[in-house]
Image (cartoon, rainbow, N blue to C red; front, side, top):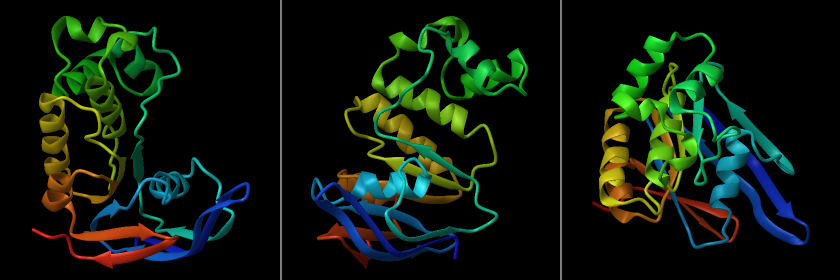
Length: 201
């Protein structure tokens, strides 16, 4: 078991979002999480990624797991920096040429690398963050609404990147095409419970 959720619970004040959630991720799983707005999908991902504390229960992640999280809202602490400088500051063990090669692989080429992060579109921000996340040997990728609010070109690029990625995948999406293309199993969140099923093709 790569990831195990046991009796997981989360509340915000009086509002209980998740209660006694139990589920697991096995090697090779690509799991899509669906559910109505407000059922706790993003909260669940944040708890698994460690950016949101849990109120009750246990999250067990295997020792060999190297996870990366692409949230729905991409934030950079220093958006005034160029793409190249952002790579060099956040990935201190790489050379400028290696950073440029990495950026080129994610379609940031030529003078693009000197643009300020602040001028990037939503799709470009996702691409840059993925470029930085996938710089390491990631084997568990967590995505929150990866195709939301993207133009067609950016959606296609994200889909191609996920297609090439060979590790385990856990993602929230309302995009039925994306779910059917990539999910091997579906977790449906409803009234604090997870229903597990196969995706409809």
